[in-house]
Image (cartoon, rainbow, N blue to C red; front, side, top):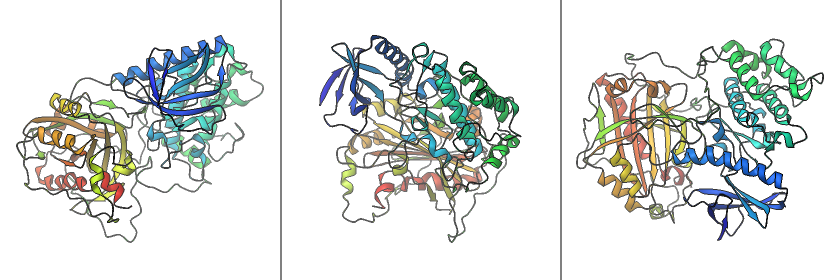
Length: 579
């Protein structure tokens, strides 16, 4: 291991072996900053000697530290567009030359299952994403590029390979920022605007081909058509290319209602007709549509009972979709417990909304809680609850390896720790609608929970939101990971008999989002079921309730089944039982 000193004054412990050595311009190493955060050290094959270039890199570093590090310190990353840029966080100089940079790792949710980046060109492959998803993604990209544009900076290579997209939400992330420079110092200060227009063209019209502006549908909103004309028509000069702000405003005006709350079906239909020649993407749980997998040949699934509505009608994935509308500046999380806040991924971007309303009073031996009416601390427990995992398909696998971080090889990913679907004891099928890696401790948790997690070195938390096939019940799950089984057991046993406040997670939009948008009093009054369990070096916390927040106690059994049964299928056994 090698230690390098950055321009900021911080030092970084760098792995001896390269993480990626095949790049033509740099060799990449994993490293850790003084706070233990894993970073990427990019060692340039050709050092930079220009004082002007080094100064531009320093300014980009200052912006990166101000946006990313400040957000990380506050426990909120990715809520703002500035944090969706892989800024250089530090610079490594040697004898007056810039020899490398410290960068954030690409967030996991912007990687494909095989670890490769999910680049923009995959948007217009054989199965393009839904129109609403592409529009939301393009608006987000405009907001991100606007951060650079309004600061007089040029990325220089906003090509599809350098813009990534989230697998389950319309979110983007810009990488390869080593070439960021001041606009006045590059040959074409408006290059990013051309590149942005090209990405928007391919993103909105995946069937139109790569030639920008070649086939603009006649029925496309005139405001958007005019911007494409200015971007690609040679009669216009480079300085007439639309700014990211103009694009974002035009897209919102063309595809969203005036309040920005709903997509316009007629406008989306124009995009759908343009991409009609493409085969429809298969509907699976990990896609933005959150649909159910095909069940042909499977037993008929049960549906939970319909109960009276206590809040406004549900917003489903059909008609129309609810967009994510972002501001261009970073947004901090609320520090007030029990208040709806935006939850952030460990790396950069948000995918769910969290509200700290799981208030449990667990007496000695209790790991289960239900509530109805106005009660928020009532407890009932079925002694001896079993959460024995299913037998592994590979008898030689030693489950003892799952008790220590040094021997546990389970990937910390949603795919590894959370099943895409499961069926509870009432034969109701649930599908994973959203998921994401989060810091173990959130501001909404009660202090005793925070202290227990911090004192036992909780490492990460994987969150998931499941919804039944009839879109009636929301099931929130947290999988917390500790260095050892002893520490997980200490937390679990230590919190018994104490009031505890954990988190409920919801999708940011669509079915289930209304739960975290409801008044706290209404949420507290809803009937719910919650279970907790420790297994290996993991701790699980579940919470189930009706999306319409009913107070009808007759449905308790329908909530208890998924809240309890999910504990048998999450965690490392989800990964190892098929291996």
